[in-house]
Image 1 (cartoon, protein in one colour):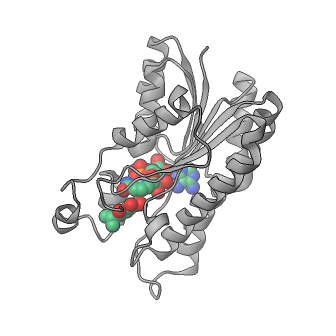
Image 2: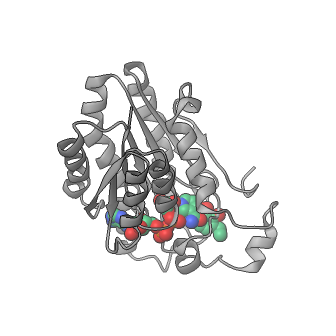
Length: 244
Ligand SMILES: NC(=O)C1=CN([C@@H]2O[C@H](COP(=O)(O)OP(=O)(O)OC[C@H]3O[C@@H](n4cnc5c(N)ncnc54)[C@H](O)[C@@H]3O)[C@@H](O)[C@H]2O)C=CC1
Ligand SMILES: CC(C)c1ccc(C(=O)O)c(O)c1O
């Protein structure tokens, strides 16, 4: 059966790679975007070519009503959500002294608050049906911390703790919650928003390269499918050896 898959922040980077994987499986896609949606028509055409379909939903997930609205749109269109991928995220790198309250609030309300709001909205339907998968994109930096990324690390550490707590709460009722915690992946976020996108950082990694978005999408696809049947509250970290 075709799955109904909601992906936040699907318009580029890791979210787009995840959307492409589910499109190739011919699933029903609900693709959230924040501003531009240029590449999403192509993703939906791919889903259709494989027997599925899709819709796009504009929403700023840092506002809980907007985040829960994505789930309402999905349920309105398809009657259920089988898989929720909380991918949308923001990163501003700055020292603690330089970080403004507005930047702190933006990262916490998007990365942690948006994940919370989407989960809270999707769970009643999943629990009523006794099945569902939720995959939260956190970060290796939520596990190990990193200088000049304190607010981001706090938000992603929160996503990791949230994943574990909710997983324990809902697994007995058939809903499996896990997280993928990527290391450095070559996307706009890394290129534009971090101080550390440089040859020195790349050379310091055991694999000597940054990761590719599809290497994260592959983990998400695995957790969403039969390979994820016995996975509960786990934090999988494809990171090229950056965090061992
Ligand atoms: N690129 C990297 O090295 C790593 C990224 N991650 C995480 O992976 C996820 C995806 O990041 P990338 O693809 O790398 O970044 P990106 O910046 O290319 O994409 C992020 C997406 O989230 C969307 N977004 C941001 N704020 C939003 C909001 N308030 N409402 C709705 N959508 C919003 C953006 O519009 C964009 O489409 C993020 O959660 C990020 O924290 C985690 C570890 C490493
Ligand atoms: C410090 C490195 C380059 C880096 C930057 C950003 C992220 C992230 O967005 O989570 C990382 O995981 C990193 O390892």
